[in-house]
Amino acid sequence: MPHAEIKYSADMNLDTQAMMGLIETTISNHDSGAGAVKSRAYRIEDYRHTHVIINITVLPKAHRDAEFMNALLNDLSSGLKAMIDQACAFSLELHFNGAYYATDDLKGPAT
View (cartoon, rainbow, N blue to C red):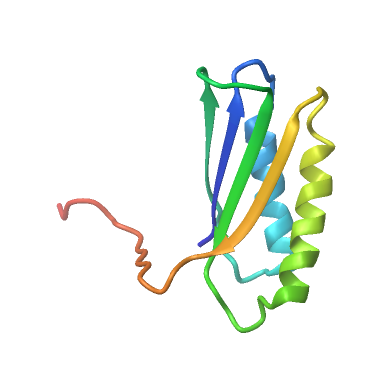
């Protein structure tokens, strides 16, 4: 279950829903077993310099080696940059969850 966070300065007009969709589709195209990408976007009012930073976290798996991660990074970067139509600093980081990471799908209270 990958996670994605998009943080961007408030002077930007981004279609973050489309960006989240592109992230999920691109990851799925590289790794069909990755699952749904839990995504969120934060519009930052207090900033200095126009910028967007996108952090994507995935579970470490044997097939997600350097070649895989670089190919994924390149495809995500080109796709996301194409969605931004104004001058800004752009940063994108892929990284792995740490050794002490736990995740689960909670179903809510039993009825």
